[in-house]
Image (tube, rainbow, N blue to C red; front, top):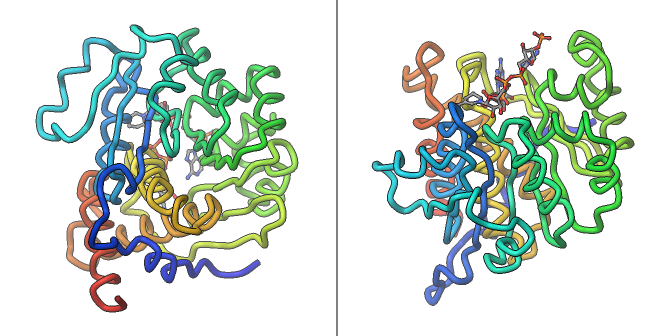
Length: 290
Ligand SMILES: NC(=O)C1=CN([C@@H]2O[C@H](COP(=O)(O)OP(=O)(O)OC[C@H]3O[C@@H](n4cnc5c(N)ncnc54)[C@H](OP(=O)(O)O)[C@@H]3O)[C@@H](O)[C@H]2O)[C@@H](O)CC1
Ligand SMILES: Nc1ncnc2c1ncn2[C@@H]1O[C@H](COP(=O)(O)OP(=O)(O)O)[C@@H](O)[C@H]1O
């Protein structure tokens, strides 16, 4: 197992003078069921601040469509008003991330089915992982995907996928992540203290950064948005989804550590602040190296 060291990939995010929003990546994030719109909004803000050219939110709770008053850059779509397969073929996202606050309704299942069926990179998080754990047809679609896919389970979600207890995952995190890769054929991020990343054909890496100030609701949604934002830009610039996932995990953990250094944590550290810190880290690195 090697230590995560992915910062050099930031160089691939450097913008050409003639860059435009059409070639800096379109991230589509799907989730936000009633009471959990915040999860999708946090993921959206994170994708935006990580640099996605366009960030679209496909919101399952129609009453929450108007709540993003402080981030009008996010493009809001009502998931109830569209046929999932048709909507995905019209939107043509560079990357889809599905799961933050999505719940386990029939509507959530329909969007996940469409996302799994579509050719193109995909990130699966939160309740979308729980749906995979409880619907064998969705697991089979996942296993048969030919496009790159990243899963971001916390230990509880990992345990549901593996039909075991959270304690068993935590007792042997390396064994658990390898079992998840074998089960799903995807890149897997096993979150928590010392996050692990593994994927078919890749050596497992361990993130030695991050801190317990990050133990707050919404931190995982911020990671999902960051992977989406980095991948949206990087996938068209010789960065594959495994590399984009590694870079996002490292930026997310480093951002948390930076905020603690500035005494914005560990107590009271928020996912919204972390998005802005990730933006600073990316731009600082670019200004030093390019
Ligand atoms: N603002 C919003 O709208 C927000 C909305 N959110 C949305 O809520 C939905 C439910 O997601 P959720 O993760 O809160 O619930 P759930 O899957 O039952 O997991 C909890 C259990 O998992 C475990 N566990 C987790 N981490 C662990 C660790 N590091 N180390 C060890 N164990 C760990 C632990 O299990 P235990 O040890 O108790 O067995 C724990 O009790 C989801 O859709 C999400 O997007 C949230 O994102 C918050 C912000
Ligand atoms: N003690 C810790 N040390 C390092 N990272 C942590 C710690 N606690 C939480 N994190 C990170 O914060 C994020 C939490 O994700 P998750 O549990 O999915 O939160 P949520 O579902 O509330 O968004 C993960 O990236 C995890 O690695």
